[in-house]
Amino acid sequence: ARSLIFSASMPPASVAAVSAAVDVMLEEEWRGAALWRNTRIMLERLQEAGFDTGPSQTPIIPAVVGEDVVAFQMCRRLFEEGVFVNSVISPAVEKGNALIRLSLMATHTEDQVHLAMDRMVKVGRELGVIS
Image (cartoon, rainbow, N blue to C red; front, top):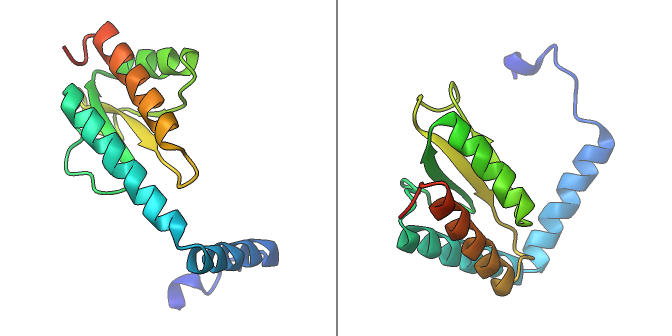
């Protein structure tokens, strides 16, 4: 494509890794089912607790927390609780709509998803994001 004329090609190792990942996805169908099961559990738990997840329909789930500083505080507190999340702050999102981004994998167990959600609810209440 014209837009790629002067760009470097992907390194062979990256191409091989992507190819192997696609092979795993095709051979191990349980992974897709497990990922969507985990996504449903997490979305339901977040919404039941009162988090605004917007129209999310992917295994990367946003939870709106408000101000940028609250997103930073929530990330820190969740890390202290053993849950790793990312914050998304302005200008990536509109000011006052900072969010926590939760990312799921097929290899997370249901117990791990529930434990993470228990801690998310605890910290959300602690910081006044949810009541």
